[in-house]
Length: 370
Ligand code: PMP
Image (cartoon, rainbow, N blue to C red; front, top):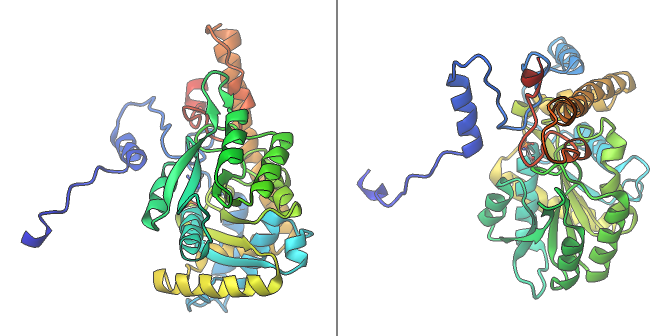
């Protein structure tokens, strides 16, 4: 123990600490606005009906074993997951130039993506840095620091308008050194709930292309933002169509309610099929030393859902249930604050923002309303 006296005590993770404190609290009207997890009308975690169904299917499969998956994951999962985010008709998919690897949910995808850039990206005169939105999911800072890429921030949220600081953001893209890496939230920006409009995304893509920047997309909420899987993937697909060099981190934690199963993927869109193969070979080498093989169960569940039209349609219904409830909660909170309580101030950002977050979180509002 002597030799470890130099190890300083680290503070507990603030969000998970809050969850633990919430569990211990006996106050009957308590509300957890901490970790971003969906709750139903009873403030309970919601197991998606389609997930219950595929769990049954898996359990009853006599051929089910517990062997290792390939290093890069379950192929039927990664290929369907790539089509889900990029679109089956994406030029990247039809050109067979996506390197997809199964990861430990979205966090693992961010890590593997960051590690890959750390090893192989040709950082320009701007140095080994990544531009993150101000604010962003706090874990982004640690994830990039861990692989020796320095996080710096670009203006994103404007407290005066409670909206996007669009011009300052665009100016940063313009004035940054060429070939910088910009992390972008694909939809339902965490923690502001403020997303660019399609028109704004177009302008962002223009500047990124012009400056030769790299787009590091983090997509943790596809379908969860609007209820529409396609709509929430719009920005990523548009960037691919325009030929922006990019990768996408994908999580099934929220949209499939599989938080603890750690189902995700990293998709690196390459300029050619041959480049995609080389990239995948290196991702495989990195993955081998980190986790050897990704976990099978959650990937099997999602693969069943994505590869069967009936189950896929059921999943889309479940997604609409979750997104619809979040949108309803926003409307109801807005109605209560502005119309019923006549609270001074403008509360329209509550209905204009998207997903589970606003500057403060908006999760278990059902309690306030019941
Ligand atoms: N990125 C963002 C922006 C997130 O909000 C989250 C979840 N809070 C994640 C990534 C990763 O989540 P997970 O590892 O559970 O998929």
